[in-house]
Length: 383
Image 1 (spheres, one colour):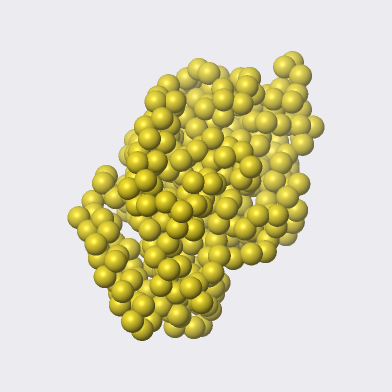
Image 2 (cartoon, one colour):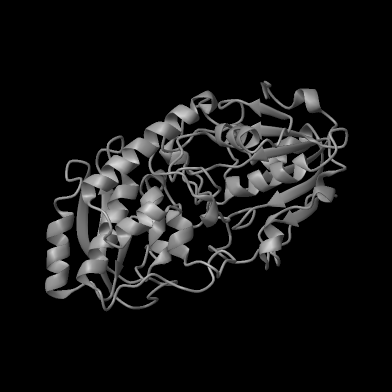
């Protein structure tokens, strides 16, 4: 791996890019447009949600079409699980593959999993015909703070690469270089550092939603925990203006809700404020049904632990609403062999906690140990 200042040394190279609207900022332009001034753009690889984040989660992009000269559009989120992984043959005639796409700091977020699958495909090519991978780095919107435990291999899926913790604390280049070394891919990688095409720091007034339900930078703060709600019958706020910050369900009412309020009022009280509310999702879970719930308002981001909050929330809701609350079954991100909560939690110990098999202090100690181990393990990938 080496650092390069820009793409000028690759001028005229046959290139493919993985990108979407989140790669915006250089001279107030989309980067996929800028790159055409440097390289011979042959292929544009589309992640989940499409080039302009037009599509909701788990919606195939196979019907999307765009025109970029003679460049081919290759959708990497289609109708089958096989569509997620590019064929090495698609990459063989390229000199470089540019990976320029923003992450939100959590392992569930699928853009860097798609980038990882591209690295894997490149690794299967003969070194002579394998393209160089250029990673245009960008800041981690929630910084270097780490949360969670390594995903166990049996739970690996599109929403979780093995060995990675829930909130990884790395930039895109950091995580992708970790994959390259950890899994012995041996792909030739060059990194364009933060600040060349992306601004040095995120300006919340210039935030470009990388996908429909990450509308603000604040959403990224709660997402490492709140994404677990996707595996339950609680609304994670899709269909509202504050997804993942707003959450609840129609059945959260009565004395059990009062007890839940009391328990949550004692949890991370110095870091957050929970605002009781009612909301009406316009789509997704509980569409057009009034939900009782909360808005999660983070007051001290550096101390707030989103994953712990959501694990605590789910455990207590399952205790207080045993007949109404449930973990969802069925297809989730092309997988039907495991419930979504298993793919998202990714750890037998955490799943055991949700089942009441360990105490609060045991969970806290377990997470603290796992987070320290990940920080040490990935120190060389902090850019």
